Length: 631
Image 1 (cartoon, rainbow, N blue to C red):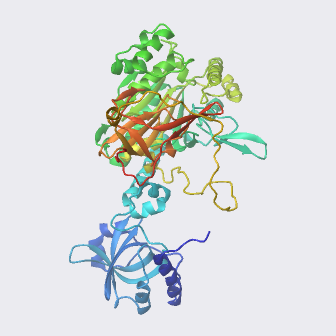
Image 2: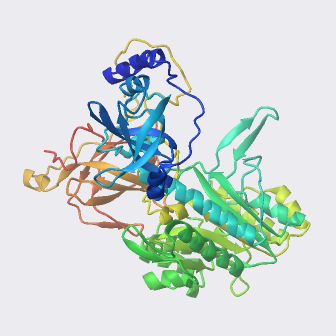
Image 3: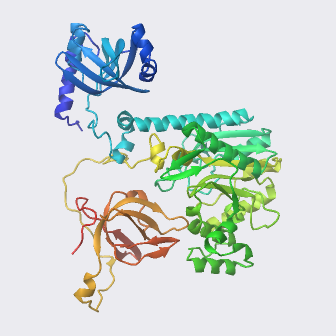
């Protein structure tokens, strides 16, 4: 379909021929810069005194014309610098070219440095050339690019308009370099393992699947590199690490992206204490690279990552925040009774360990603001770590938390091939009972273990979450240059159909069953006490350990976020609902669900069709403002 051009775009295209007629190429070639804007600001006095010519290149962000003179702001990779154009200091041809310059154009500029009467360092332009003509106007200059969805979809515009965003990704690069420097300085070898794998493993997650045509077989994008890295330990490497891209076919929210960056490290002849020490040093190194100190503020809370960090076992943490003692449980019935008292959701086949982990997720994580290591994780949720010799219900594993979020995961690695096979078989049983994230059995990995793997300390850190902390970013999308996004309009659809005349869709309701209407009536006064409001979905995430619940963060027009939980995950993915306008009852008393207070109820329409329950969340026109009352 032919693109529709607005007036500004047509005018800019019309300037291309005029630029060429002046003898300039609208899309020029190599330009040798002598300085960046940052260098000129830092050495302005010396450059002004010497009269040295400087050459810079960048994008024109502001133009202020005054007849035969003009001031412009040029933005390069390092910052902004003011330019001063004057008709009698450039050639006639260049002045005619300047009259064709628009905001957004990329210029190469040569001149001398001076200071204006207002004290601003400026380049007096003597020569310049066009390097790239911008055919589209930039976002409105005073407001920049503020729409978050547009910022993520068009990151190139975000980087142009918002210098702080560029600084975030420079910090990210500096932190990655600091991590590499630490590991190489401590004798670790950086390795690479397959992204495309015949069998996935190393974590509990759903994989992305694809088909390898040459071998006519199903392949998976890796969910973790762990099992390949351990094969290298069997082969004789003692200290290895990989900074890896992992892929998990799960929901998206402010802390999850289906493609993410992590680091996994393995230290042969080490144990959990070694990798806990690594965690503390790596986090401190990133803080120093980003903030220059181990103390920083994240979302208004001061965090100090200087080690050593305190440690709590998982059972101790649950007891601290609920008063319930899982360590004292002798039977599965006692553990279930604790979960029942805490209103923790669990499955029919969940064992002691899954019950403890569910209680921890519901009641503890949100309290772990300052850095802490949670140790002694249950065997059911730790299939690759050594058993704790003091209590076989637990393993020698830890997770590190900051600001209520898991940051690192490590353990003394399981190197007993017989025990490992038994753990894998336990995972297969859980898979048969409906856990589609459980590990499949990797026979080649078990074969490798049978040749002997040394005792090892292993560590995994989710780097995107770490970088969120170190850049004061509230969403994982703020630290990913190109986060996963649902395509706009028809983009991304694989099926192309010929256009056909629009006709009303014929809907077959012949197999539909609905609940009978109530026979009892409700008086108008009682009904009118229910407060129905239009609300906007600001965020929506899946509730951990629940296959049904979605947690909505809603704008109800009051100026404060409202949280409502709704059991509709079987019908909607959370990312599909962000930005929608829905209907809620907002004056119901708070109801605790999975340790979260749900303040209201979203309205859905339910019916039965062919014996299957169908549900549609009531969504209304987005022109309806948040808080609008329904009558």
